Image (cartoon, rainbow, N blue to C red; front, top):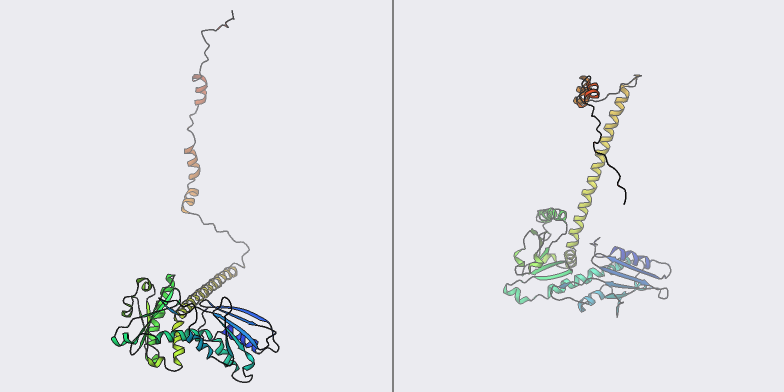
Length: 369
């Protein structure tokens, strides 16, 4: 299941247990989360206050270039989480992109300990957010001044790219939505319609305006048909300057990166809710039917309780009644039997007896010469 919080709950729980342990323990954990994200947590008895955290995560990249390692600005952002506690180990553990050495002895015991560990548990969100922020900053300002707004294709999951179009007054983020099952498409379209209605209402005036269209929006003209071929339509968000100012920037970026996961999570929960309602409805109907049948049986038993004899009621069809009333069964048997003529056998024995014939010619055995 997707984790929509910036801090990983499982990683946070393990780090808190190691931090609150009375004595050093040797621990090795492997965590796998949504989006091919992997964590490896390891501690040694010989190093009482040190924990090693290795991370392997998909890297946000443009459609044309694929990054195989973290850029320099991402590394600097990770160092800024808590420079006294977090130290980057080079080279990283084999199979992982980044390894951090955590010094729990420098975390205060009374206050801010949970907050620091929560910040460390959100390292994956920090990595992705820094990449998206840097990609948005590197857009050619000359294209914007000339009025040509070229969309940036960003890939976090291989089959779920999205586009960012930077304009002078706003950012337009477009998500092509794809599903495998037809039922998912129906649920998602209803969800998008409700999201558009609620997002553009007065109650959500501070939220970014949301739009849904079954065809590609004008901002994606010129993109390849392979990327624009969808069955769930296109969802667009218009992000203005007030949505990315100060601390809102990280939250906005994190919500954009997890929008596809949010849609799939909503569709899955809706299908589960519908199935539970159908099962509960079926169970209530069965119980009502059983109760109604039981009341009829009790009523019939109470009605015939005083009688000593009960006649067995046999239902006859109309054909069976006619056969019994007119004795048609024996008559049909007569019709099917052979016709008998009185005295025919005596006549047959006397006059129709075949005579016996004897051969006129006789044969003699030939003797050998």
